[in-house]
Length: 164
Length: 164
Image (cartoon, rainbow over all chains, first blue to last red; front, side, top):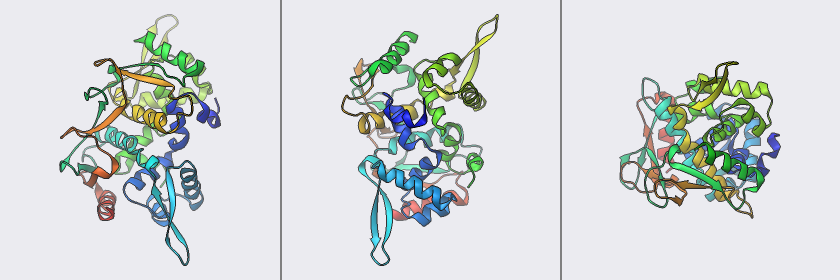
């Protein structure tokens, strides 16, 4: 499989990875959720070349994850804001952060604490079932082919079901 | 910032991305959760070179995400299994898959359906607060520096708090 073919794979992970599966893109998204919006600010924080940053931002705009909003008229300047589609990536970012908090925090502990505004407490994300509300771990899940599976997706699901 | 410095960033996302932020690594992990375990099987499914696959598997073993288990003595053959640390990546994989299901499924619908064994229903993952149990979206979260923040982490948290 070539990387450029990923978007057409009958697999929602592969398709998402075709949008966010670049290392710098994930760091840019982290910063977006921390309210970083301007090109110079991203650049100062990430220390990557203007060329690389411009390329990644352009791809995120093209994918509908970020939108360019003018914040100044003369000279015209833009900032980058998460769209609703982009805001929906929050669980991905939070899950990645949480794994790092648990498994890679080191001696000094986690770098950032996340507080839930509604209840006012520091929290960890819990991944729950939308039907029964219970927490869901890997072993609690079974897969079967969906309508968009195709042959490859059906093979995948069968293989997973056989293995247990 | 150089890529090799990521592991030392006071940021749990950057640290996790240093382990899983490679495109092929994410596809390998997806397959692990679908019970793929053997080198030849990974290779047939992903269509990448033996060299690339061996490198990624070795890195995941070194990071403690996978372990090599002998399944045959003569000739000795190994398979790759998720460790507990690796199984903890399930919410990351599930969040990535879910975003693809919602935003990139296309006309035919999602390729795989996930069923929760405990309740027997097809489900979507809900990202909930570990304290109050309510669903948590990006706008519901405030960050503050944790014990491992360092100067950079404190800057991050202050910036995010100021912005909103």
